[in-house]
Amino acid sequence: MDNFIIGAQAVLNLPSILLIVIGIITGIIFGAIPGLSATMAIALFLPITYGLSPTQGIVLLIALYVGGISGGLISAILTHIPGTPSSVATCFDGWPLTQKGQATKALGVGIVFSFIGTLFSTIILIFLSPILARFAIKFGAYEYFALGIFSLSMIGSLSGKSLAKGISSALFGCMFATVGIDMIGAVPRFSFGVQSMKMGFNILPVMIGMFAVAEILKAAEESRHPLQSETIKINIKGIKGFGFSWAEFRSQWSNGLYSSLIGTGIGILPGIGGGIANIIAYSAVKNKSKYPEKFGSGIIDGVVATETSNNAAIGGALVPLLCLGIPGDTVTAMLLGGLTLHGISPGPLMFTQNVDIVYGIFIALLISAVLMLLIEFYGLRAFVALLKLPKSTLLPGIFIFCVIGAFGVNNQMFDVWTVLLFGGIGYFFNKIKMPTAPFILGFIIGPIIEVNLRRGLMFSQGSFAPFITSPIATVFLSASLLSLVLSGIKNIRRKMDKKSI
Image 1 (cartoon, rainbow, N blue to C red):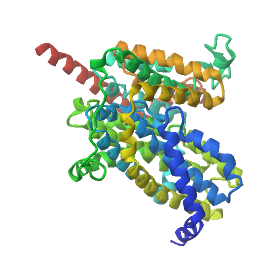
Image 2: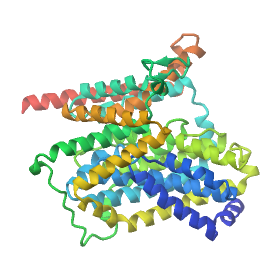
Image 3: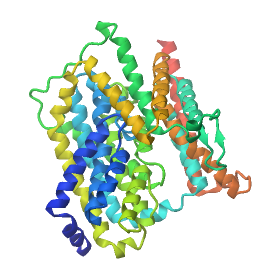
Image 4: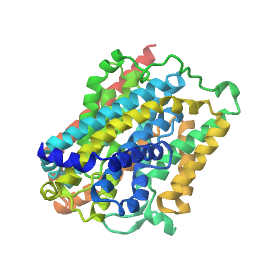
């Protein structure tokens, strides 16, 4: 309690609270606009923190982090375009709910469970961070390889009606991820002599293209058929609170707890982050659901799973950063830079040498979670009002933001061409009914599997035995096999049911 008092004295003052409010609002805006992200928000504000005290600087960055991750749900639900990689799976049920006229309910559910996920992982961070950090440090090449295989085994849940198309989509994602400099041998691969391609395809432009530009192209095509492109009508009069009932909230508590555990656990593992957490949580919740066939048609279960898990990954990702000095994802890598900028070295000694900073971060997370809930709640009706804008105005504006966001990643036109390329690929996937979610999963997980497979083989001098004998790796590989078998059985049963009909 003494440490909490020290942290409270450092954070509970007018300048720090104002910085948190500014950070939350800015983060939500960056998260909601396709092409921008929490990482970009922190990168832009990092120089500003140099003129602030260490506590105020870190508090501002934490608020940007929380707001940026949560803000992605707004565009994912309202436009079917994920604002950040952490909100990719929110599109799966969030957009169908909007098409049903239930955008307010989808947004309300996402906001409330984003708050719950952040709160849950912060409590875990406060009380269990040293223990969890010791567990995370046990993950080596063999364990990360097995975790990557387990993540890819979730393809069955994301493949829709065709498992073959889902696997093909994931393999295409893995294939495009090999473009660029080999992370082990530092040799360019599949760059075809193009200098810009040596750096590979950045995940943000790829995601913007596959979801945003592909959706814009699809909407442009549908605009030629007025009957197929009717304006979504939503009546916001008479809607109370967050737009969903207490009974619906109670029905989702186990889903929220399950997704919080998944998000926190994945966030703790360095290099994974919310971009994977939301997809894995969605797949896991769908697999254990009593009505998996309803997922993707517009149910709140899917929104709860994704938004709880990606926000729970926030506290999880801070565990290895604060306890070990290892960033859990790209955003915490930027936070590491912010700490270093102020002469603070994350690690075990930080809990004794920088008590005000550590506990100031804990309190800033709790305050940010509450402010995020309030700010998004009062902006709920304003978000829904965006749907009243005609598509002829809204979509070109979104496209401009997509291009600007892509260019801002590395200040290179190559990223703009990347957006257009993957926009075409995403549009083609839509035409042939091939799911895009496995592609993104393969693109993110592919390098993790490849790098850790090669590292593991180097450690074992070419032997595959350690990949199987490692207890943690064995658990993940067994779970992967079980997941694939169950997906195969479901696929066969679906085909048999169709034949019987």
